[in-house]
Image 1 (tube, helix red, strand yellow):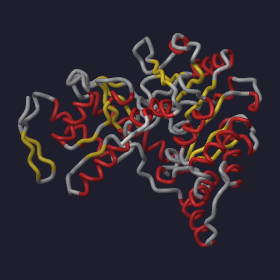
Image 2 (cartoon, rainbow, N blue to C red; image 1 turned 60 degrees about the vertical axis):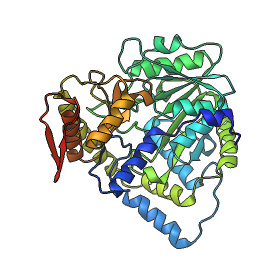
Image 3 (cartoon, one colour; image 1 turned 45 degrees about the horizontal axis):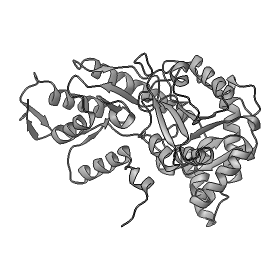
Image 4 (cartoon, rainbow, N blue to C red; image 1 turned 135 degrees about the vertical axis):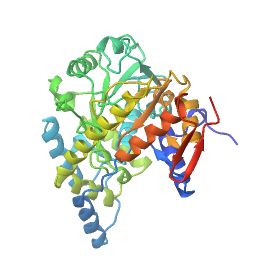
Length: 405
């Protein structure tokens, strides 16, 4: 069988693979705790459900425009005005099958083969493979100061003649770091000076903690949107806990959006009208659920920090937002893939290896589930890793015995 070189270079998404593994273990009746998950456990907003029911009852489930239905575009325009203080036109908006597709078609629109896409590390697991799918090269940038907070100088050092675009995800998956206002201002202006595309992956921008102010990249540019090379991506998956609905969007200049829509039209056509209507319901409906989720996540973050800070040898930076923390477990095992497999095998706790995010020795731990999952999961991890742990641990009526050192 002949497979393309690009296809052979693409690996399965590790986060989706973990979700599948968790489902298989649960189906077998195993007491697995999934600390690698990337979806909040809140229920879908009632307004989204009612909007879906309304279109179902009509029986009019038809094709949609490649760039999204007018009702969703209108909702995104209002959202952009409210949260970004920028009034855009329908031609500036593309609705996609999740923020992931919006980023993918943006990259396919701007990247030529062998051109470079720069993004800070740690980074979301899909960014490198997205670049590969364009025949381009992903360039991760680790902050020189050893933190999760990049400075403009970190990015500048990696920009070369082949650099075409910069991709920023803040608050960041996996670290939970919310980049500084100075950095966001600097990177917007730097990309304008260097004539680079800037893609802002803003999917977590309302899930921030400790009274922090949301940062708006449009505040740092004087360019009209139709003269700008900045693309802002968002969606309903995280803030509305609508991961299965697969609706995201991009806001950018008209020519870019038109080209992105052309690509998407040949890939998938427009997103399902059912799911777009649900997104309209969420965006236009009662918003208290977003704040309730944000407050719950902040509390869960605090619980996880307390648990990890009592774990000898583990280093962790307190997340500013999202529902992840990125903890350094290298004192126990520098190979994060080995460590993650060990924790699954020995105590059935699922974590995501830091190597998948560009930094080995770390694990991404999610606190979007129940507090009991957080406390029980960390307790199991401590028992598995701490050589001073007792020889036995009970999980329900199951007795585990340490048969390793």
